Image 1: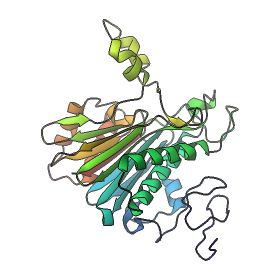
Image 2 (image 1 turned 45 degrees about the vertical axis):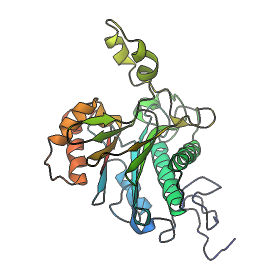
Image 3 (image 1 turned 30 degrees about the horizontal axis):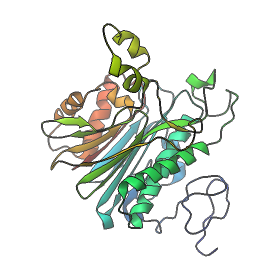
Length: 330
């Protein structure tokens, strides 16, 4: 081990190897400012442009976080009814590759420590994709699959005591612990006019053009996979009661490697790639409604102004859940 370059884990203080992205002892991400691929222009949860003070990020988690570059931005907001923010996000721009990385995660509120699960998944996915790009990898779908596998491992290492009364449980989960830490995830890698998407759960990806919009992901939910293909008659009201029951997520109660959906799209010439948690799309569930929201904002809006407008819409519509939105110009 090269002790001159080694860094101690910020969580357990174990000495790590220079090439480690995560602590082998506890699984915490290792920050190496100035040495990590893409570090010249990256943003993590709670920062705007540049390395992040972890204490400042933790203090910001429960309320409102904004990240911004000139060509992409993200906002994570507690909303109006939740006690804390259990979403997480990460953005990066790797100038040397002309690439951008976006990650949005939504902690499962009925699991233990959902905020920590979402944060662990977002950071792990973000760091792995940035590192892969820095090493010159060109198989982006393979890099995305590996990143989600790393995120699964990070979520599984979030401390958990299955007694239903552990520290960090949400009010919804405090009465009865329904499982170990869990989160959804949607991630995008934009490069060379293409986007590679990976997702598990019901956080979504959209493309919004000048005249049309498309939902690029599908939901891993009971409604999407079990009922909707056979939906007839007056079943809609009953279906709505279970519309958000997840069939896939990241967490230790998912056996083996996560069943991640991965796809690559050739992007149109102009528009916006939008990632969001259900705190937004619950109030605008169709691509057409998302397009109307975007087109209703000033035409010269920056990505940050777009995200602010979309978050404000969700808050004004009720703000029942945490709201996370990330937008990149194309």
